[in-house]
Image (tube, rainbow, N blue to C red; front, side, top):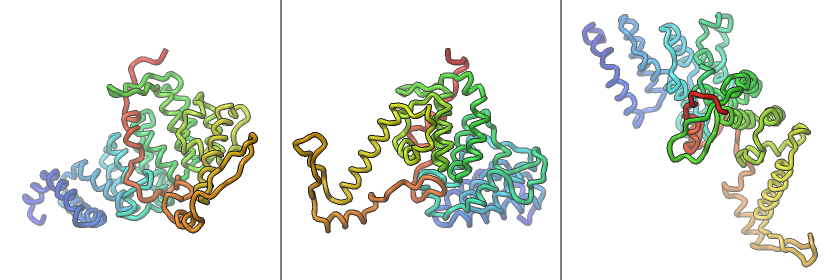
Length: 345
């Protein structure tokens, strides 16, 4: 790097450098890769050489992986300084590197983001709050709300940070957009059995994410503002909402909700019976009967120590030990789907 021609050639060969750094993850930690990227970019800038956007985006991703607030701040500011935009793919990739998916694998390798640090990255750094909007450089400043490819990951990361007020604000903005008021059919991949509009996709996602944020009162309120049948929600979302039935608006308490409540009680009772090693034996009269042992009590207690007897999935922030992304693979096509050119009739 001390020789000008060598430095210039290295700056041009940014792609081989990036490939080499990705390969070395097999032997070194992500923070070590980040330190190497820091050194390379600093020397390029010191030599007044062009730093390619791809190299900056890579550094930003490794800052996210490394849970480094200073590095995230540095590279977001640099990207703003160079007047670059984050494509939807880069934006989604950065959010994925926060390891906010269902029990994220990244937390095993790099530990957890602190909630207050991640919220600064998302919504504004403490010492730059006075900057005008056009000079802000937190991740939210690069958000394109009109594009679902940006918005769905943004909503998810806010929900995992339990920022329910921010999720609700996004809902109040989105529900007035044409994606909801003038919905369009989604162009799903060939062979997909699901037909869905931009409105359906958005409403389902907002309900799921505000439920994950833990604000069940707002989750019930949001559900009541949509036309989505309660029975069409995912099982874990229904069960979470039914943990707080007192928050359900009277107009939203339908026969669907009552039926799902009964099913939830039945599942929970079955779970308790399995844990205790008993089963229900109906009597001769309607409603009569008693419980009988189906295994020894000692064996039942041993089974209670197994992992499958965790009382609940740990929704919210942060999640632990799961390789899954923000969006399950079987739903990736739904969120990647483009909208048709004409509104639904």
